Length: 242
Ligand code: 1GP
Image (cartoon, rainbow, N blue to C red):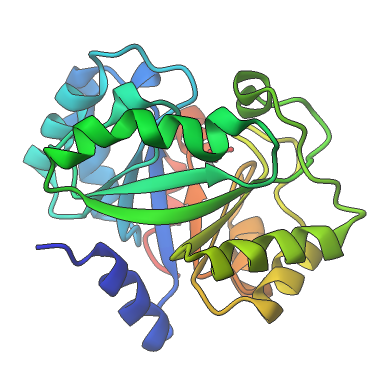
């Protein structure tokens, strides 16, 4: 059943904070999935995201199948490339990198993905994706050859998010980049949230419970954490209750 987006909207309606744990297929061995997912299951996480900027073609599907053996949480693809699309997941964030002006990541990859998506039962969720500067160059910036948006130009960030909403995006994702030095600032989050009516996802560089709480307080409806948990799985223990 295609209910991931409805579930996100329902959780917002009942004021539930939503946390997604991001797993990069390049960084997770299949043998480690079971113990890792057990910890995720005991945490407050509502979703598992799977994806990365530079994942080899044959890694994503076996990983998703293994994750699904050990959890009932929805698995959502957060792909860096078309080769990361697999029917084994529940949903796909169909990301358009609206902060950049590289046509490949605005529409090109999407056209390439259609032959896969025509055959799939995946829930495809149109998602605007905005890369925000964080002080260091991140992999997503390198791979996509785009420039992140300056935090000094909050109006441009807000207007880009709104343009995405008017184009029909169902989610908006503010991204500082995996392993970012600084997460997206609370000023940027609240300015975007103030104008947007679609759900707002925030990720990149969130390493502490305080940063997580700050992102929610500023208006994020969902927060994504990857690197901090890759580096220290015990962080999941801190995420056992809100
Ligand atoms: C990256 O937003 C996600 O695309 C998560 O970032 O790995 O820094 O948590 P981190």
